[in-house]
Amino acid sequence: MNQITNELSKEWKDIEWVLTDVDDTLTWKGQLPPETLIALQTLRDAGKKVVAVTGACAGWCDHIAQLWPVDAVLGENGAVIMEKEGGYLTLRSGTPLEEISENQAKLKVQVLEILAGYPELSLTLDQAYRLCEVAIDIGQNRDKVDDEIIEEIVSKIHALGAHATASSIHINAWYGEHSKKATATSFLKQKGLSESEIIQHACYVGDSMNDQYMFEILPKSVGVSNIRHYWDRLAYHPSVVMDNPGGFGFAEFTKKLLALD
Image 1 (cartoon, helix red, strand yellow):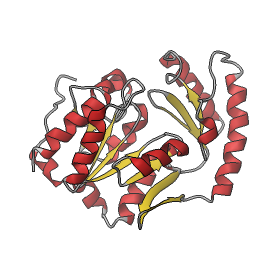
Image 2 (image 1 turned 90 degrees about the vertical axis):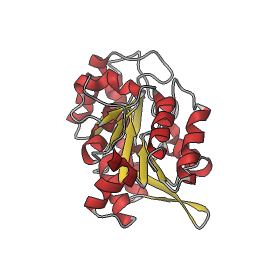
Image 3 (image 1 turned 180 degrees about the vertical axis):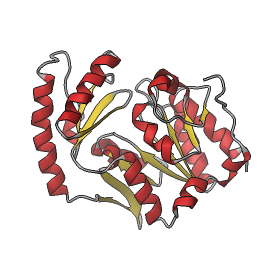
């Protein structure tokens, strides 16, 4: 860990796309620091494209896409894309919404059966605003759940044949082949970037386990300081780590990036 730097090399000057997680990357302790919004707007003013890539519910993503200074939101771990086109917000998905809804209903029953063995746990308060996923609260509106229990539940969901990943606040589960990694790659290619251009011109900022595969595909990757909690369990690591947590770390990164121009 001591070998990880908080400084950006000259190659970061090529960054045109800043992809970022939301919870505990742009937020911190359940709040959105004003420094985050200022950083997002500063990036856009500098001509950078900003894309939120998050496990957050579609309802929360709608708010982000409508009101925050971002260019698009890839929500529910890539299930949906929200993007303004011609001044109006659009929603699209690689899977028909009817199929997504059917899979979600099936999985919700299965997850609730798993949670019967964990009476202290429950679905997230925002479950009603999700189009695809089923989410379990592991630290948003309750005390943080032990890592061993989180891993146990994720394994049980995987045994169903579903996907599951843990963020700092939720376990997100879904049926379907989308993911942060797959949808982000597809989205950037739709914008005209080749695979080599994605590596050269796009970066990712994250904070937890569900960000590791974004760290894998984007060598220019950033961890806010709270990524250190997960460091020994990550299969793939960010190339730089900020000194500050959450949105404060994102603002720190923004200043370093724009100082290169």
